[in-house]
Image (cartoon, rainbow, N blue to C red):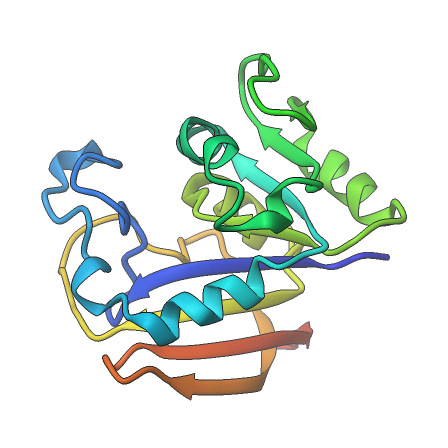
Length: 195
């Protein structure tokens, strides 16, 4: 069975909303988009290149897919692993394949994701996709977390872990810190928390 690996940029207070740009996600009146920019240095870029080298498939929420599909097909030299990645998109509405290798996931999402995990193939990476990530956490579908903690607090915004998150134990498998103070941490799920 292949693994689902969730990669996320987050603030020290757990915010994941709109890390890449001011207008990326302004829902809820969020005004702090682009908060990773002051901390994104060469060493973080090198780590992202390693993580995106492939092979992998992608599991994305619709908003994240739309952001990725508007940029990455035209910049594949930056993250060549995206060329062969199958893109599975969780959406309430049909997804028109604007990007080669795109397939929609609608209705019965947890069961469909379990079926994807059971297929032969590379790991499945999840980027952004905060709303869909809540479904993954609720149903215990995340196997690894590759987190980047940025030395900033925002006090508002969408958080990585919501109230429906299923209890689970994770083991730290590696960690490092960039010169800009970004903590890179990889965790592997070991089991469910027992009462």
